[in-house]
Image (cartoon, rainbow, N blue to C red; front, side, top):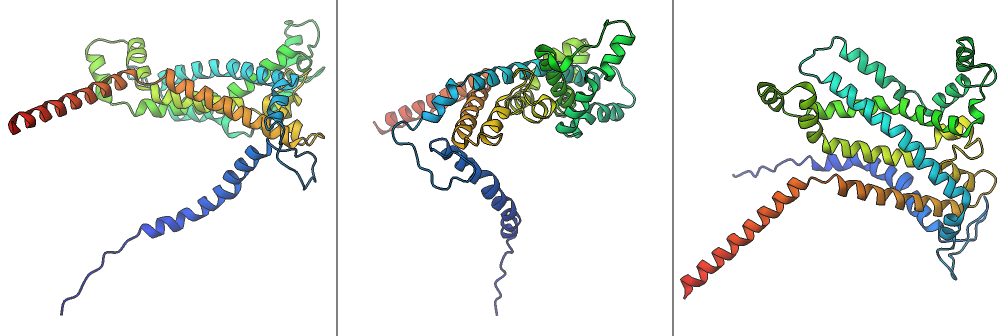
Length: 330
């Protein structure tokens, strides 16, 4: 009597374990995204409005209203300005620390301790950090004012939170201080993924630390740098917690970001859900376009050129083979 052994398939268990994530994604991510996208084309206003309809005369009316809104223009300008002000020092310090931690010529003691210290601000919640810095720069009595006045750098207390420039700089510094450690960890992980043989060959050829960093480390980190740039762009354009908790967009809308503007449109007394949804979709388009531009600018040109050469060689090989077959038939 012959027995037939059946193979045991465990793939179904993988699908079972993925069900909770899929259900949560559909309910809490996909549905709200689709609902928000459609809400921008309706006349939905008010907290308890149940009957709302799609716009018939001009379906892009809400989008036009948002783009013509001066507060939205100001918030978009502030968002881009604050992101640039915090990202440039963030990526600079992160690269310097990465070069320091991954140096093959200078061995540093206590690397793990310093990494934890630099990454620590990222663990603290953004709202907590905003409240902390609001207390530090408070007027008239605050730690910063006390230090500056007692040291003679200022004759009297300075109202930091009442200055447009100072407020923007503080928000940008908070963003930088919170995220530079995370950026450093990502870059260090990328460097550790580079083959040590390349560094050994460079060291044998007599390359110094600066040459090794700029000619080996940076080119091999292009993909990681692109990831860091895109994620920072997305997070910067969605900046909400710190500007909202720190000064609620003030003073005089100096720290008003697009996310704070959207919140004010939807929940801060106005309840203009359709315009808030339209503003959200506009910001989504801005993020998509900026990300696409970054991907295009930082693409690997050498790899693209190599792929074109491979395709051309294959095409020529097929043509030669086809011509040989035709000659053989003749």
